[in-house]
Image (cartoon, rainbow, N blue to C red; front, side):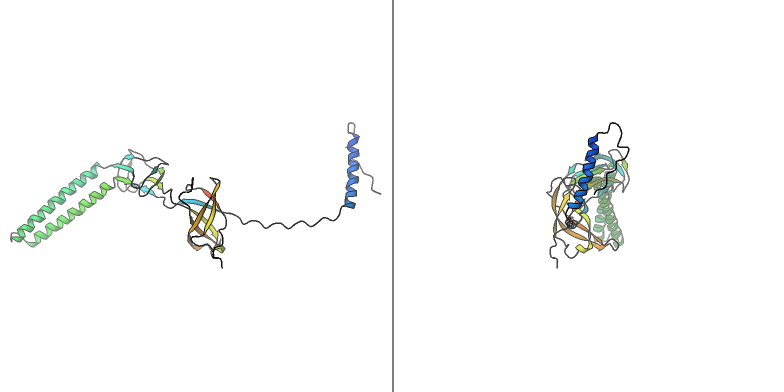
Length: 274
């Protein structure tokens, strides 16, 4: 016989419905019968092996330089703003270079004078009216004047900074009217058409991870995948973490891709695995 159920006194107070007590009695009795009649349960199915974790990577630009001033001068014009796109050879920064152009004109006049003097002494030398030493010194002065003119031309050329490749402006670091010194940063740019993804892969992938192997890259910020190809591997395996740096080229026509985006990377197919 089943033991008589015991009800705490807290339940037996005015206002408690007797149906609740009856339900508890039936529940207790049914539970006992279920324990006696329930068949042995089947063993739980084995858990599936966990999926291989996705690696993380970052989209980078192949070229991302910071342009600096090669002369000390005042900025006359900054033609681009942050985020603007430009073509190769486009003018980005223009300096006020009146003094540099004046030096070029002076150097050119000095060069012309030295050349004429060397020519005159050469004519006199043919008639024996001067010495070979004077002719040699005049030729040396003409060569030095030519070198000074070339330096002046280079300084004038540096008064205009042009884009070394087609790209976009990341950040302008100077403004029109500002005086900058030689080597001072002016503008950060990047090549937004040639992008790659950088990530760390397990060294166990090395037997089949080689240039040209394709794999899918999930771009978090865009919500879709693109196909990348391994371009090159790092120079060494990290001795502690046993990972190697991998660089993979991304398609130039992939819509919306930008440097700095985070991507998820699954294991590439094991092409050529021994």
